[in-house]
Image 1 (tube, helix red, strand yellow):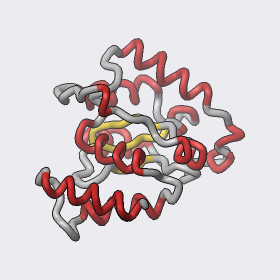
Image 2 (tube, rainbow, N blue to C red; image 1 turned 30 degrees about the vertical axis):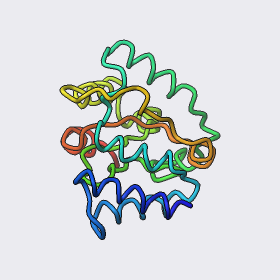
Image 3 (cartoon, rainbow, N blue to C red; image 1 turned 180 degrees about the horizontal axis):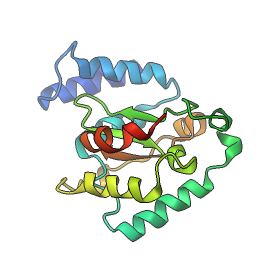
Image 4 (cartoon, one colour; image 1 turned 180 degrees about the vertical axis):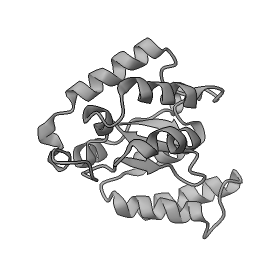
Length: 174
């Protein structure tokens, strides 16, 4: 079923001019499906969506963003992240992950904020600057991760523009 969806998604993107058969984007979709076997069609769609729209559909108010992200970080229990307790390294969800195809954006794991590697103001600033000038997609096209993906990987991240991530955040990660 996943393979059929991936091939269909590649075909649709090909029609949109973003990808042709046997392209790095098609390969990236296949790698994503292999890395996250519990991923469903919704999760693959979300990855493509994030590469196109970044954080453009999220909060643009810095105070609201700080409250929202700090609330999510506070809800992340240490028990759910034993891999991260004694140093920072990949656990159930990577510390950062480039989005698909053009890799315009990066998913930055909130465990980096929880462990004090990146400060909350640094991340919020990066997210808000990443959203500037981006088109705001119709909310009916915005999706959350599937229940299976959430249960398997417990993803907590924010989307940051690739150039901002590489210039300001990547150097902070041990």
